[in-house]
Image (cartoon, rainbow, N blue to C red; front, side):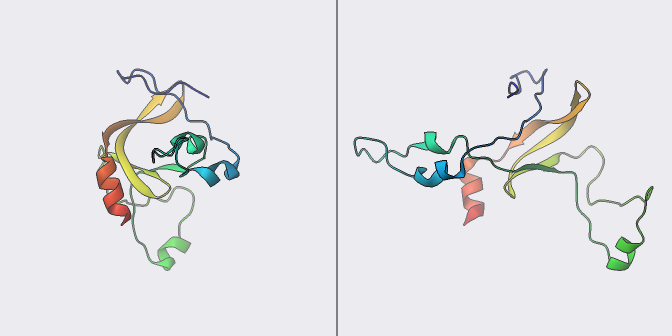
Length: 123
């Protein structure tokens, strides 16, 4: 697997798709040995999640959708230069900007949604 983004943002690693045994998550919420009540997160660290970036959205009638072809331009709801949304399994976790490193696209995170805010949105 590639190295993570360095703190200065000079290097951006591409993200390889993680693979893991789905049954490994079965005991994800099991308490740590000793009955202390602590949650053992180690068992879920290899569970794959879907990371996606969204440039923008738009709504168009099916008539217009069927008329799209090579070279068509679809206007999105964002201005050029606005940050992209970063989602993990459909939940907004950050905003960022597109970068190119070693001829590959990547994203530099500019703002991360706090864990408390992410949990609040889940409810």
